[in-house]
Image 1 (tube, rainbow, N blue to C red):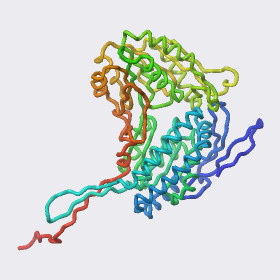
Image 2 (cartoon, rainbow, N blue to C red; image 1 turned 90 degrees about the horizontal axis):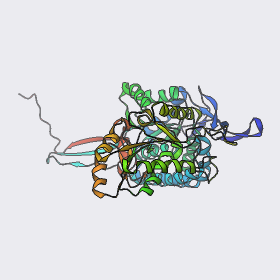
Image 3 (cartoon, one colour; image 1 turned 30 degrees about the horizontal axis):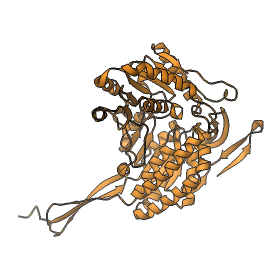
Length: 502
């Protein structure tokens, strides 16, 4: 499936020649092979396949055949056994997967190791749900027995982003497979490698042919064709809102089901009565984690005015302490942006902040020190004097830029926090229990963290309000987007009147 080949300059490239379709490794029909760029070096590290429309057709046909076969009728506990076997293989593969994920998207290897260990537990959680798709009995009268049953929705297209490829894939395929659906994964063209490695593990776990398929490809061709395909029943997508809107248009002809986890511009509110040290720890971590490449980034830091200058000074000092460098060095705090276009976008927002009148108090530059000059590294950045009309406060940047916004009192904090088209996550810090309840209940976001931030578990539902998405991932209800309710009514008498009797 993959091999290492020599490249110019004495380096080597890992080569992935084939797609995973119907339980087999197949050469693309109408796709191509491209170079995958290591964002830490700016140089190719792997050769990967990009599938085309005909490859999507093959994958969907394989998924449909598998769905119509024994998979959807397999007892849930048997699907659970296979998923647990896969989870065990995934856990054993974490050292290799962490390195490959880092080479693909630039995240720190030590952070990937922690995330992947959690993902192994996520898969175990989804396995535990495989036999929990229960219906209910509906009491009517003695003449009929009415009940509901829950059926898998069918073939699912899982369209995965580049910022957290393995995690986003886990949240989609774990629930879909547990529900009895079959899946075609279309990873982002910038980060396709680990999805192909998942296919290897699925194959080894004994997942039946066609149940799990991987076709890396470009969004405008393979992705669009997957969304439009009449034999795909549902799309689960994580990414930008503009792409989601196009997907809705493309899938309208056959009324596809959709789950969207889209952007965010999370408010992180610090009240003057908070535990300031811990609040600053959380606020700086949430502003710069994953080099700013997270939908749940707490990049709008709302600070009550009595402590505003103190927090600005703390952010300025903390930015100087962040060690930015190569992802394989466990002493570093932040790696590069995932690709060159994202680096350029982040730098453009630094200029936008200046133009809109914000005060740049830390960072704001590409890092070109020796050894990092060819990678996509950027300094952790802090703007003060920000108001909620500025572009850096309203638009999702996906870079390590914190915007510090002052406020006076709860009402103003809530007005600023909710003045956004997004509603994915939010955070607030206060020692006042009453305030914690009052404010959290009025924030328009799918997940609110109080005196903590970015706490995610397989058991906590995750998703957005407003333009941040449709549906929820995780939790007991994680299967819901992948199931249809069917109502069955059975007569207990077998009698039906002749409506046309004289």
